[in-house]
Length: 122
Length: 109
Image (cartoon, rainbow over all chains, first blue to last red; front, side, top):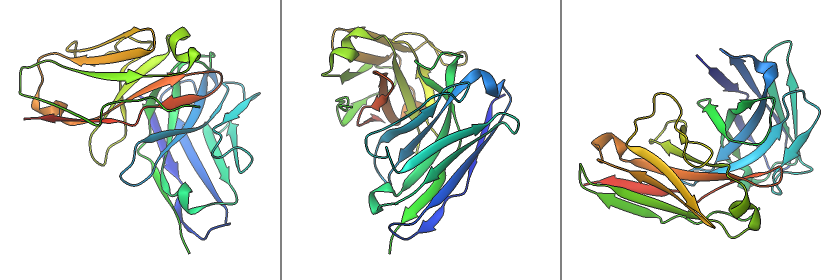
């Protein structure tokens, strides 16, 4: 059974930084692309970033490109999201999600963690 | 990364069938068959219902079905159940990015 547990959320001032962590279990972590998505309070889902199964490529949404950085540590079955220059509009629940297909990046996210809340406010 | 358009709300009585549309304006949406659908109950993580337009993961009831024609995809719930009262999101892959629809609130009357 797939388990994804996010941590690292909290309150931060505009312009600040935060690092989120996702710990995975229940599947071959190094075979799957991994995503982050977010959901602002009372709003819809928004895709944030993806890292390929081998960590060779990362892709970001226009809203976070240049400010967020995604990395994976296959030895620890973990995923991290470094968030810099945070803005109030980055306030959201951040979810870690597993790419459904083995090796292939395209396709959907099939399992999601419970999320961690990030609040950016002065 | 254009958003996908969904109706804000759809309602139906138990046992009825409803459909939720998801319209994309980009050529990528029409070309790629990587449309998925998620269900989300309040305070919970999204749950995958449909992937690659019409495929259901194991454990998803067969009353949920997906389709796509041109620039519009659809999720149909046949035989609506009280537990189907939730938010539903479509999602599509396009050129190394993913985009979600704005979400549809389904109310079971």
